[in-house]
Length: 132
Image 1 (tube, rainbow, N blue to C red):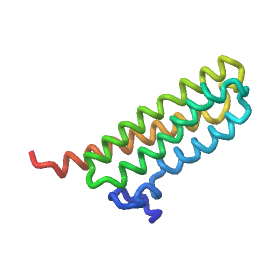
Image 2 (cartoon, rainbow, N blue to C red; image 1 turned 90 degrees about the horizontal axis):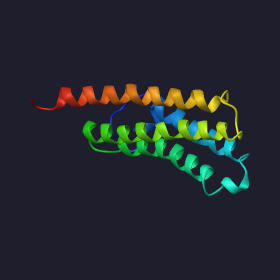
Image 3 (cartoon, rainbow, N blue to C red; image 1 turned 120 degrees about the horizontal axis):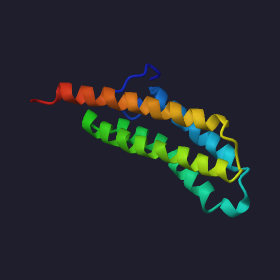
């Protein structure tokens, strides 16, 4: 696939930069949170891991749907999920578990921007295909 196409197919998401980077974000978050205190395992660690996995998962699910309207809906959910790790990373920094200079902050921001752009593109495609 790799062409960056956004046509819904079973693996359309593999070509999307937003999916690739959100997958990297989830992996990076797992690695980063390995160093969190053990008492955080079922609290902050679990929460930040869940939401980071949710971003890539929603992109993939939306891309596999039948049309741009559904894809846009799942991208909207992914965008919401992308706002969570930033807050949780800030809390982790407030608690001294990480530094605010950690690369995960920049990656969350990049994923969020990519999702916003992709969402706009899909919505425009939806509007161009919907009868007035």
